[in-house]
Length: 443
Image (cartoon, rainbow, N blue to C red; front, side, top):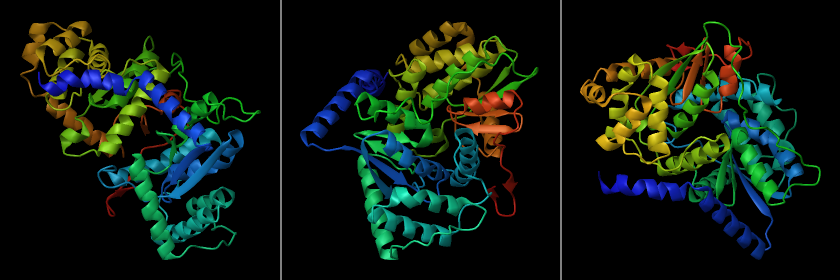
């Protein structure tokens, strides 16, 4: 056992603890009051990002609900290391945003293509002018909807910033986003914490309400967090393909939710394990790792999933963990083993790269240690992991956790509602995109 695996559980337990977070929030509020500043929320808008097209529609209502000062910034798309499979991400974002808009009563349609560079340039110039003239919330929603609509462009003619002004604004906004610790668009930042789009807006609202920043008539949240559903009435013969990685904290959360929702039903969960991105040669920037860990901890607390005392299973621990998947499934304890492994490395700080840690994980799942030792010598799991990766990519999905039900393929532990709808044979669901062989892209 190396020094890192010894220290990491204690360090992560502190870093991801609600106590540290509460202390950070108290300190931020103290400083705000001492400076007599308003509650200031920063919004980072990416012109060609569908999730930003949804978020910008919510800003006026957010301001109406809370006594806040919203500062908007136009930013560039994430760098290549933060979006390693950009084509799939772009195509998926459009159809996912269209589905999310349908669920939440917002406006967005997936036209099957991104705005052109000229359209983005024009939209950016108009939005920068709106920001600099402090009119962003009054006109930005109409401009953004026109950009993404298959209908005609906006009927409203607005002044535009010059190309130099746009580039200067983008450079300053990108630098601010980077300094504050993020990399993406559709992000809200308030006093040390980040909130991504509609899916995390309720966390920001909860915080503002706790600070007494809500206006008198504000009740609940603009968009309630996805609630647990009951899947007993799923169609006979239903199945869910669950694509996951042992190194993905969101996979750990999704596994707990999925297995709990399908327990006692006739729904078959097919376990499709893949190697983590970083073990496939795809680097993940520090800002992305930091945000994911803090956000996963926040979501785990909301969903009562064990999380926080981490011993990163990257490398040998994950390989050893995956080597035992065929054995666990053959013994009928595949789900129990996945849960035990996830809890061990993400909540209990167990080192799955050591025999002691792995033995604790496997024994709890009902596997005999002699069989475990034998299975660790078999590399056949690599074939299954690669097949799952290729299958996942073919669905237009690039990361985990992902799910497939019939023709529906969705990404993220936030999309259990889409899985639920597919299992109940609803028709208003995002379908897997087609691959355009001529242009070599997903549409």
